[in-house]
Length: 113
Length: 115
Image (cartoon, rainbow over all chains, first blue to last red; front, top):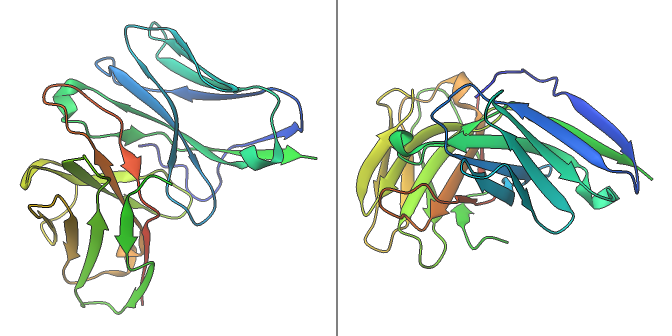
């Protein structure tokens, strides 16, 4: 995964607004993508996933978009709430990697009340 | 909560010592993966166990080793600890579908500090 040291990119949004978190990946063979949410002192929590034969998938208040042409993944959170404040990681894998996840560097989402 | 448990929660060791971390996978899952997460970074893959056999390894030296037991629980062992081994160690379990990538669910992690 990317090494961004101690200074994670931060996205600050107002409560109730929509949030968009972006992720770029480099492996064109990646066929499975996952977004995880990690709160302080906890392990990553599964949010939503998407396979490479899709370009959009929706969950409860979350949508993942996949653009394989430019190797870009995004997570959209609707009506962002204070409980959404956390670090968000994208992760990718492919069949050749034996289910090994490669994580991006993470984005910190801060929700202002 | 995912049903993946890890122990201990926190651990402090000194350089040169050895440590064993434990993980119990979610019910019905036969695959366990271990990751190291340094402060402010994304998790890095250490290795994976599928039905008690190592099934892939990341860029970690041989002093990182593991085991998986018949009940699919797992151990991560680290010998000759170094200061840079200080990190959050995460265990993730998955169903383990042959030939298909599937979702990994993470435990809360073990925070290891090496002094």
